[in-house]
Image (cartoon, rainbow over all chains, first blue to last red):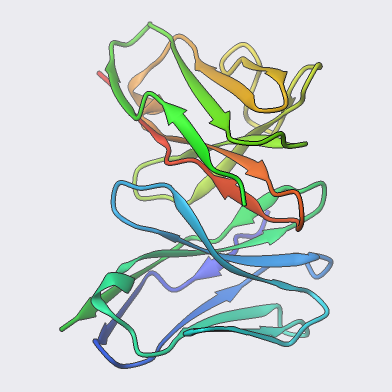
Length: 110
Length: 114
């Protein structure tokens, strides 16, 4: 089947905004998620968006959803070095099955 | 949210042996899942652990290789059987949150097979 695609790598400077993009596959997905994985750790749920929403804001995080293009993005405002991690998008394709993106490694430099 | 713990956190095993990974949730949950994350890769769903019945496996995963138990609503185990170096991965369990359709993940078990 098709992959949930993400760019592999993003490098930003501390204080800048980061935008991580994701193209998902199933137009009937009900929820879409962003997870963060720090080195040697499990996955931390950052935020999620229901498919009937265009945007969701949660403190420094803004999620944008374009259902027509099956495009999801995560914007992190005022990026900090502690935000350096791998970020995965995921779609809920039904029966609670999550299909994960390929992951974007975010590197924040001082 | 659900707090999930896994044991062991990591292990190094010899080929041909088996390892059982435990997953404990701090509250009763309806659904639990097992994922595999191969080195440098994304996560792939292995199976849904069903309480009181056989697990539901995804394509490419079979019960003989990855037997799963779920004796109650807070606990599950995954066994990696007859291991080979290709089984070296991080194995993660997750649980479905009660209020929203969100999955919370355990810290993972890092398995190395020599």
